[in-house]
Amino acid sequence: MNAETQIKKGRKYDQVIAGARAVFMREGFEGASVDEIARDAGVSKATLYSYFPDKQHLFLEVLKQECDAQSEVEVLFEQTGLSVEEKLCVICKKLITFFVSDFGQDMFRVCVAEAKRFPELGETFYASGPKHWGEKIAGFLCSDKAKAVLDIEDPFLAADQLAQLCRTDLMLKVMFGIEKDPSEEELDRIVDEAVRTFLARYRRKPAAVG
Amino acid sequence: MNAETQIKKGRKYDQVIAGARAVFMREGFEGASVDEIARDAGVSKATLYSYFPDKQHLFLEVLKQECDAQSEVEVLFEQTGLSVEEKLCVICKKLITFFVSDFGQDMFRVCVAEAKRFPELGETFYASGPKHWGEKIAGFLCSDKAKAVLDIEDPFLAADQLAQLCRTDLMLKVMFGIEKDPSEEELDRIVDEAVRTFLARYRRKPAAVG
DNA sequence: CCTATTGTAAACTAACCAGTTTAGTTTCGG
DNA sequence: CCGAAACTAAACTGGTTAGTTTACAATAGG
Image (cartoon, rainbow over all chains, first blue to last red; front, side):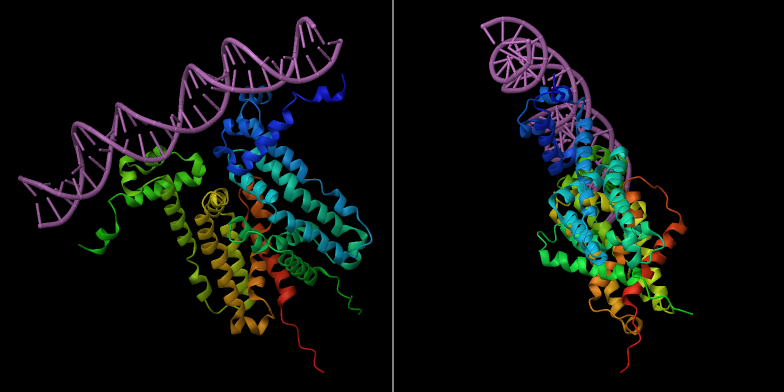
């Protein structure tokens, strides 16, 4: 009786989640049929319904797992040996790369589409995505190292502005199918311009000595 | 035989569009049923189907009309007697007010949800929304009056950054149901901070002589 | 006032979908 | 190798949906 058998509700639990994730991301909540999910997961419908009481609970479980996965960004903020400017660039690059990735796009699309129907989902997504990142960035902006270079009154607002400068028109273009595969150069350009604007506002000015 | 009778395919065309708009905005494409639309529009299903071949075409027609309506922003850029800084604030206020409005939120939500299924819709929304505004703002940034105050290399990028600074966390909070009715003060604060950051980067610096 | 157009209500088709049930098969610990 | 637990395929229930059809009523122009 090891821990694994305790936790798992059945042999094919992960398979079901994987199939459901694929189909929900592709079709949205209304568009996805349970038969399709079962087929995609390589599992019978009866098995699926032995794990989840209904389609909604399956949907929420999938998206909660995705939100959790999305939150694993700790590593990024622990790396050392970079200047503040370099670290801002690294953060921005990470953000924009996520924003235009298939995973990031699908997550955003599905959550936006269903947030009204499932308020709990909206909260979960916001908390593990924008909020979590905002706090991480704000934390960095408050660090001693950052404070030596930056002059920030409201770190949460500054963090938000930095993130927004990364979102950019490009994210919308990808979202609405205008642009498919943005090049690394495009991304770097946006990162560079975002950090440039951010620093123009928040870089510490030499104190005017009376 | 006046023009009106030519254009209209029937007496109740506008009614159908109005009902369809309401239901699609409320329920999304998959979630909306044609019976519900007909009921909401106060029209029989047969009438509805005499105007549109199927649900998809009705959906696209509604959203195209909405996109057209959204494009009517000419007025804003013609008003005179404002300083460049004031005009930036007016533009930002207009943007953010739209972003958090019920109409703006529903439009965005539905278009994001269905852009993958209806590529044409994604293009239409992008063209009449973000692209149209971006061009308008860039045009203003290139005007002689603005150029006297601002020093901008890439006006489209600058316009994009200004718009993004308006979107902010607040738009996401409303989108995901975290915040319901942002106060006028909150909006003004964001506008102020957006313009501040924008000007920090783009305000013309006194030329260093010699 | 008459007639063609435009509309209506309601029934109907054929498909689909969430969720259940059944009868039988696979898997795996002991 | 046995027996319980997990799984399967497939049929079934009850409900919904997009789209059509039919028989009838309102409307509006000439």
